[in-house]
Amino acid sequence: MGELRLGIIGLGSAGGRRLTAALAHPRVTVAATADPTVPGLASTVHVATGEELLRLPDLDAVCIAVPTAMAPELTQTALGRGLHVLVEKPPGRSASEFRRVLAGRNGHVLRVGFNHRLHGSLQEAHRVLASGLLGRLEAVDAVYERPWLARPNRWRSEVTSAGGGILLDQGIHLLDALRWLLGPLTVRAHEVHGAPMEKAVEATLDAMGTTVRLTSRADAPYCRFALTLRGKLGTLTLSGLETSSRAYAPERLDLVCATRTESARWDHDPSWGAELGGFVRHCLDGLDDGHGDPADALEVLRLVDQLRSPAQVEARL
Image (cartoon, rainbow, N blue to C red):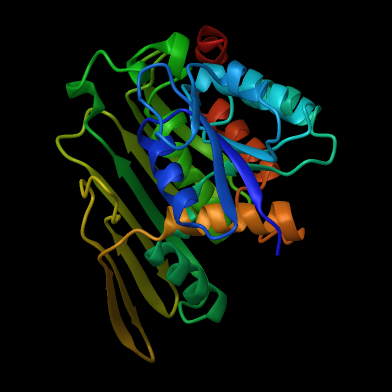
């Protein structure tokens, strides 16, 4: 079967969840962790920085979950040392920055942590769309809001560390999910508030003839995730996400179409375990399930760049 000796760089929110998933995986040994402020496990080598961890021997792969500005260099270094990499989204502050990372892959596995598409409601939505139950899609409304402006002094509030605001950090999950569900997206019109840290984005996109309206805000009064897909034969509505914070819960899906009416609800988040499991199979068995594809991540970053002015993109670099 084989075993993956894994290092985890960053033990904050995303890194901590990946550590939990790795400890539960039967084919993974957590060989080392790195974080300057969060302590590691007593049974595992722990160092302060990612650079120190990447100098350790006998690693096969690393998970990188650090502020956005730090991710590209650590990813490049890890790939250059022959390690497989799972890097938290966004993997860079712009498409051009991540393109430079891709130039150094050398055949090693590189996946990007767009785990939202592995939530139960989005997985079911993908199946419904593939079944044709909705008929031809006519309109899509997508909303992802989080009141981050009420919580200052976090690394996400600093352009030097985050590289951007709500669209780059959170709305990017929505763009990835929409591309996975609908196919390629092009920008028709958009309005951005706040620079260089965008606090609100309203955009109209085109998905192969279907109009998509996207909203991503950091000045919202509460957390909200909603996705409505209207087809000629029916409507599919997703509301909420089941996460560890439960800030977006409950997560549910409602289908109304010519042949049936269905509802489903999820009370747990399988996405972190599913994401890590796919990464392990890719590294050990060569089985690529298509999730976390760096080519997808590059296209999403290109969309983010298009939805921001050139001055904003340069300011975050």
